[in-house]
Length: 441
Image 1 (tube, rainbow, N blue to C red):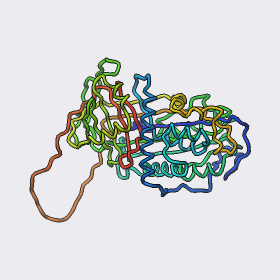
Image 2 (image 1 turned 90 degrees about the vertical axis):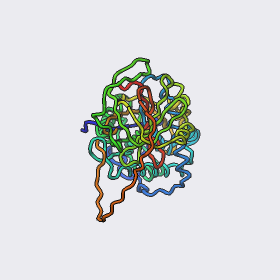
Image 3 (image 1 turned 60 degrees about the vertical axis):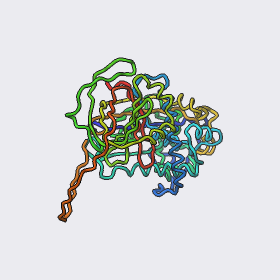
Image 4 (image 1 turned 180 degrees about the vertical axis):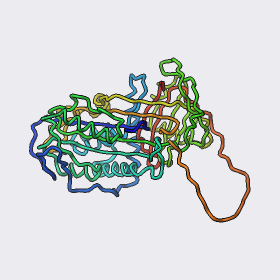
């Protein structure tokens, strides 16, 4: 079991049966628990997508991330952290079986901008891109960079799952369907799925599914897990860390370890906020930090939108930023997203009126719950540690002396008050994680 980690997230979606079960289909023995019911189709490793479709869906994913953030923060005065990407991937797998109003309502709430035929290849493209990141880069724990996006699905033994549905899961999400006897032993199913989650997140997410969440009526469980471990491109030196004040959302002041470095980074300064983008080793992912003026967090969050993020991007400059920021850690408990997703417009999916007939051909399925748990830790090493080092050698003799061209000086940015942060993929613009820190102590 590893001791430290940048961040990991796991998401679970359970579909409950409202009509009697029927016979099985697909490869494998549909009456034997532990069998993988898998399509004959292989994952498409070079999906054909239009560049405009990828751009459109990433924009939709950004809109969903900020909509979800607005719901999660409502009435909360605590630190927050979740993965909109993971949630959308799991729900995209579910949407593959949705039909009628359930399909359209989910698409509206999730900002799915494409039809079924175009959207699943786009999510496949994004997953393959993300899983390819970090070649040669370092993780925050001194081992290699890790960004692992994993999908797994469990279904009731003896139940019908359509070949077309299994084909989509296999071709675009790399997932077969493992047979489990939820009806006879939901506790054993809970234990097995929790064990898979622990392995997928290097033991950082434990007991994702609480006792009683999976019942004898459960017929399918879809899980998406993201594990991320990356060093900063340029680490903070531990000797530069010293105690400093942080003004919390509650109005008190706490003393916490504050890291410090001066480094060339992208930054933006606008009315009521400062922003800085810290790259991870490999320069394929980054953490964008948004720091509102003291006392202005609520107003700032209300104005958070895709248009605002585009404005921050347009204001970006590059220079030496004098950055001071706290360490922080969040080890969240499992909580339900059912009410939040209902408020966002996909409530029909949780009711007897739901139509997931694309999964079984008959319908009678509805979402029982959507469960979420997250962990994040940010420190001097990265978000864990070592900067990549290397040497270059060449044979030639020439000495050329000239004036150095130093990057311009940027602003001084001190994270001594509540702030937001987004961990994103730079080439695609996809937001993987979003959160806020209102009290790092």
